[in-house]
Amino acid sequence: MMDDLSLQKQGLSSPYVDKPRRFVVAHVTGPFDSGKAFIESQEGGKFRVPSAHIAQLAREERGPEEDIFKNGHWVKEGVLYRKGSPDVLLPTGLPYMHPVEATKAHKSGKEYCLEDATQEGIDKAVAEGLEIKASDLDESGNLVIPCSRFGDNEYALILFGGKGDDAAKSARAREAGFWIKDARTKPQAITIYLDGKPYTSQVGNHANQLWFYGVDHDSDFRGDGRDLTYDYRVLGVSDSAEGAGAEK
Image 1 (cartoon, rainbow, N blue to C red):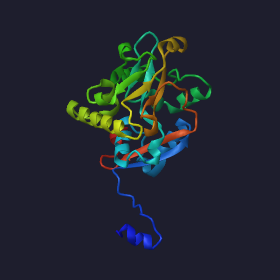
Image 2 (image 1 turned 30 degrees about the horizontal axis):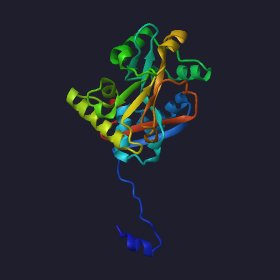
Image 3 (image 1 turned 180 degrees about the horizontal axis):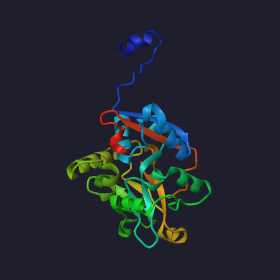
Image 4 (image 1 turned 60 degrees about the vertical axis):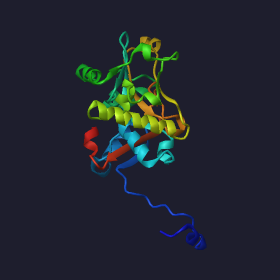
């Protein structure tokens, strides 16, 4: 490659050549149901709405200045809000499993109250998830996770640990915490914004998908909005090393 002086003599600035990537990304803007269906239909179905873990690995590979990660996008995880029982952080959100019904509910200005979800499916989601302890919430009823504690925080491990044994999950989550703490706004902690128990007592059991904010917004998560119907970014990621099937 030419040096900067040679390029300047030709009236050129430093060129950019894209490198081969492990994580290939695609995205579209639109409602969650149609956006998810479109993304998953591209290039033979190799793209999937990513888990937070896979999304974070793609962020780490491409860097915090990448435009697609300065803003936010949906991830695979979600929250199940339960009246009279602890809420649950889900590795696979119920709106992810039922995107049409969930988006339809939000379009009507309502919460997704598990329409089309079977009790068996709900029980399976709860068994795979992690109950959110009231004692872990801050004064506003949200989960705040210090970046320095990602390696041993059970909620961070669900989001960023990926698969494998405990040591591997801890190492991956810890690395994610370090990266987020050093990226752009340099947050010391991330917040998972949640619906409060008084609200759930009013509307009953319902589920939300998690929105993973971009690095310009501290890489927080939002699980407290009726946003599936809006023209938001739906991201798809394909892991060229392992294939998207591992994250289905």
